[in-house]
Length: 443
Ligand SMILES: CCCCCCCCCCCCC/C=C/[C@@H](O)[C@H](CO)NC(=O)CCCCCCCCCCCCCCC
Ligand SMILES: Nc1ncnc2c1ncn2[C@@H]1O[C@H](COP(=O)(O)OP(=O)(O)OP(=O)(O)O)[C@@H](O)[C@H]1O
Ligand SMILES: [Ca+2]
Image (cartoon, rainbow, N blue to C red):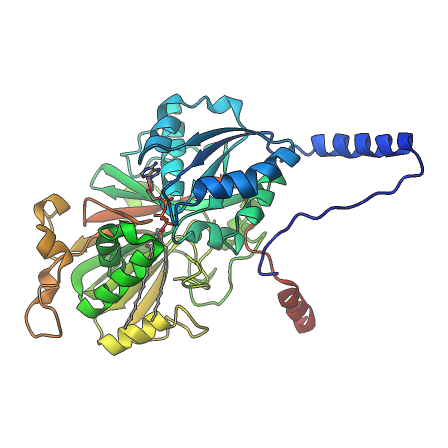
């Protein structure tokens, strides 16, 4: 149920010992032939993510399963932020392993993707600062054992945030390609985004929540309420290159399901992103306005807080990102919009919300040319110019971008989707039995 997998024992009864041994040998031989299954894994554990349970979860729930399945592991418990990333970039002997495992939340997973992808580009002499460069794909898959506060990437790729389920997907060697957004400021690479890239509301929630880390996962709720009450909006220009809209749309209600975003199927969803960078302005659209939030969801961003996610129909590996623009609106309207993330109603069905499926986009804040976070005082960045509804020019304040829970140092950014840059030990969200029955009855 609920996409959770469990181990189960099967008892074979044999008439004699030698038949029993033949069975054991035959089954072991068959399992050895399954080349998708990893045999050696490099595990990184963040001991301070989420409720600080990462090490306990791994030792109690995951390591015994790896042991049973004869998967050998090297385990690194991180000692500081960026430990895993730096280890992957420079030290790790990656040839020794069939995959990586991340025990932690979205921030920790982001570290591991950055380490692995940067290492792969260095090995292949690809310049990450060139926004038009075609990136080399890492050969190692990554498994996520959820132990963070949001665990959005695990939830959106498996359908649940359950360590045992994730461990079993790793053991059986599932593979799920995943899009990654690269974020540049002019010609300098800033970060990859794997889940939510958000300016305005989520940027402000994140900035505020970082100061409340000691609260654990509850920091987001407290910062969320505070940011909601502040009710800030920000002015800027969003330019984007739409994906072919006859193929799929953020409002088609077609949720990404297991098998949908495998390489061969993806070609039908979208033709990939080989457009030369010099042609980039052909077909671009420009929207100017005052926004409560500018959100880019590379995947649905489903998580326990919002089980269908920020963009329920976003696909994991179709080479596109859903760009959600929430324009300036009243508090009550914004509340209605937020509330719809938690129930079945359509959060895009508001006059002040629009959503576009895009391959690339740029954001330019109003009067921004020289603005970077270093130039902005804490006050002007994170505190509303006015505390409540007012007639003054609140819109001239700037927010900041949150990128998978990290604050970006620049506001003017250029984003492009790197189609299926990394692979996870996952298989996408499987249809539940009731859903399959429903489709069958429909047919
Ligand atoms: C009325 C209830 C409305 C609830 C609306 C919930 C919408 C939640 C959507 C969450 C989407 C998460 C996307 C994933 C982002 C991750 O890369 C990142 C790192 O892990 N996590 C967050 O940014 C963590 C982001 C956490 C954001 C929490 C926002 C909470 C808002 C609360 C507003 C309350 C208004 C109450 C008015 C009295
Ligand atoms: N040993 C460590 N000490 C301090 N920080 C660490 C350590 N190891 C990793 N980190 C950092 O902790 C940050 C947060 O970790 P993580 O993503 O696992 O948990 P979270 O923020 O609670 O959850 P989520 O990202 O799902 O909201 C990561 O960005 C990572 O860089
Ligand atoms: Ca996508």
